Image (tube, rainbow, N blue to C red):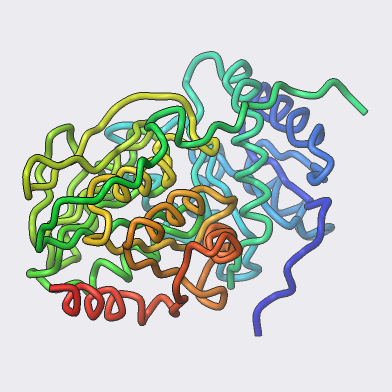
Length: 361
């Protein structure tokens, strides 16, 4: 039986060997009325002492710490008393594989911090940080000064609204997928079931910059299809999946009957870059009824408006059901908006998509 979802304020334990990070994280998280920091620890051994006295709803955990590294602690924690964990680390680029190992070990999400200017980064990213921690707190696993809030923009900030003009016909189907918290595992399960002759796939997974390339390479090694991080101008090919680079929007484009991708910078949309809303709007405008949209596990509402635009343009749209979502946020909002035709358990989603693709040709 699944553990009961906690109610706010969610109790948070901050584990980091940097006193600056601990102080900054505590100040930012405590400023959110839905979060309460119950303790901070400079290493996992100290954290274990705190957990024995009071079990938190979520833990923010650094990777490199004295006495025990964060991933080892995460594995031991999940073996004894699973608690949702957000990895918060400055490991990037060549060491991004380390944090992907953290996701494999059971971390719910990743927050990247710079090696310099950490305090300023955390303050500027307070909304993202608090949203990530709150999403993790409800994930399924075995009056001070208010911080500046990032304006929540829509896809209008990147693409003009749909004009509903008729789409030139093409026989090629495109699959567009959006996911967030819990999506790395959901996407692996989904893509590993796709055959080498499946329609081209384009994906937005909310992930920090520097991690999507390693994530795509991992999937490429376990899937029958080819998986790579999207680059500007990449063609959409049968048996290939492209994953939007972290921190860049990715859009579907078209020349004649051929589809490709455009990768570009831009403002945060629905507080994300890449944004599922931006991808889905571009798919609605570019592919219309030739597309199939899938929205998976994740916190928030990114993708709901874009998927509705896809459905209104004639695309088929599916969602992951609540029972198999780590966080049933994005699919729920898409359902509420009338954007999702039908929900499926994760294990049945790939076949449902392939059946729709086959019947469209």
